[in-house]
Image (tube, rainbow over all chains, first blue to last red; front, side, top):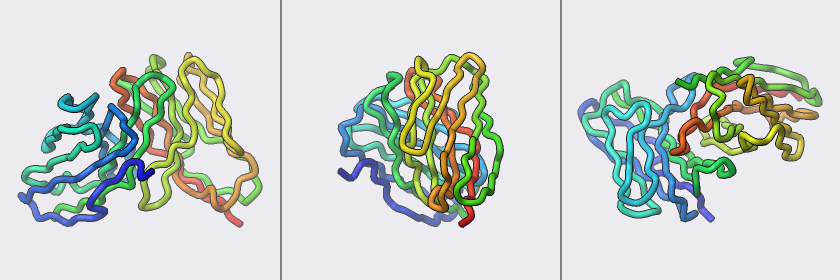
Length: 114
Length: 112
C-alpha cells in the first residue's frame, strides 16, 4: 500500500511561473487536504475536498487552485508563483471526518520561488 | 478561532528519561486530537489519535492524554531513545470537514 504520494519532491520556480503539485492516495479515502508549512510554523490548510467534484477553501487559499475529478487524485495548482509561496506542501487524506478517523500525510513537496 | 500552543519549543534529554510534551488549545469544541512525529525533511507520521470522548490513548512507549474542558493534551514518552529525536506536532480537529489546526511543534533531541 503506497498511502499518500506526492510529486515532485523538490521544485524551484521563477516568479510568475505556474506549476501543479500532484497528490494521489490509494486508500479510497473521501477526504483530501492540502497544507503548507513555513519554516518554524505549524501547518496551515490551503484547500480541502470532501469527495470527487467537491472542493472548498481553507485558511490560506489565495494564489492556489484545486480540482478533484477522481477519488484518488487532488492536484494543487499555483498560478503566477510569488516568493511568499516558498514553503513545504503536504497532502493528506482521511476516510471520514468522524472522531475516530486519522489523517494520513504524504512526504511533502519542497517549493522555492525565486 | 482555534489556536494551538506547544510547550516547550525544544527539549534535549539524555537517553532513558521519561518526558512530557504539552499541547494547549483555545477552543474545546474538538472532534479529536492527533499527535504526529516529523523527522527533518520528511512528512508527518501519525502517532496517536484521541477521540473527544476519550481521556487517554496508548501505543507502546507513548501515552497521550486529553482534557478537553481545559484545552490540554500531553504526550508522555517513556524510556526515551535517540531514535525518538524528531519534532512532535499536536493537531486538534475543530471543523466537521476534518481540517486540523497545528501547533508549531516541540523539537526533541535525545542524547545517547
